[in-house]
Length: 365
Image (cartoon, rainbow, N blue to C red):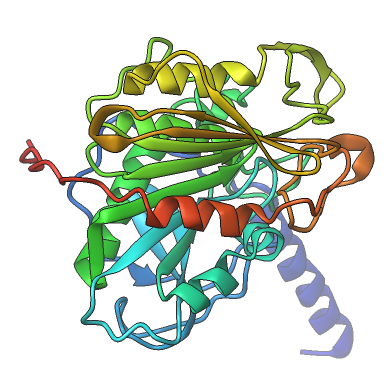
């Protein structure tokens, strides 16, 4: 074969290859089913990180008492769900320890939650396990993007992208609890959930729907969107933080401009604390105290089994983690505040609000 013929053959082969690639049809995204997850498949170390997500640290088996961060994946309703476990230095694999589940804000990631809250530092000091689950994006095939493809929890809000409204995040967190209890030494009377913004709203939803498993919840700048008429089957204490200058969760309610530019009417942030206190059977009148300059505490209680609601109002704080870092522009979320460190306050609340008893689990169908 001469040189011209060879060149012509190479061009023809290249054109054929391009036609095959361009003719491929993307695989449709499977739709999640709203089925409670109780049986958990064995997780596997996640092989590759998603764009913009924490680097994966491979480990042979979950539960090995080795200090560090380990990212795994669970299959829940045909979706791959990822989570990162932080193992503190003093974890020995034998002594039951508390578990804190930290939910990142909407449009961000587990890596953001790790950096902005300081939960890993607190876990190292107090010797408990902390896990950072990852929310789904509307299009899992594309990299996460705050505006174009935001990772969000199905907190029941009407502003949730349509593609995420069938995602069973309650089932995912329940399955995650099952796996953590199976693989690590966890004190089941001390399982807690904390979150910011969309993650805070999801923490409140979990507190209602998984009240048999969760001892207390912490929400920073979140709402109880779902269930619409919530009732606690088992008592769960709640600690709640709101800033007076939060542009997205206004203390007294009103119309807010969302990050995408549209406007939405929001209820007063005070409703979440009052609603939770009512579910616990606390007295209607809160006990008000000044923790320090610019920080007011409203305490509702005692409720069932000694539970209570602690509601912190922080002067000048925007839609950010108190005492933490701000990763989104001030024009969107407002100012930060170091008047208190929310992570320390939350942990002090959690460690004094263990569950009095863990009810027997219903058998899976």
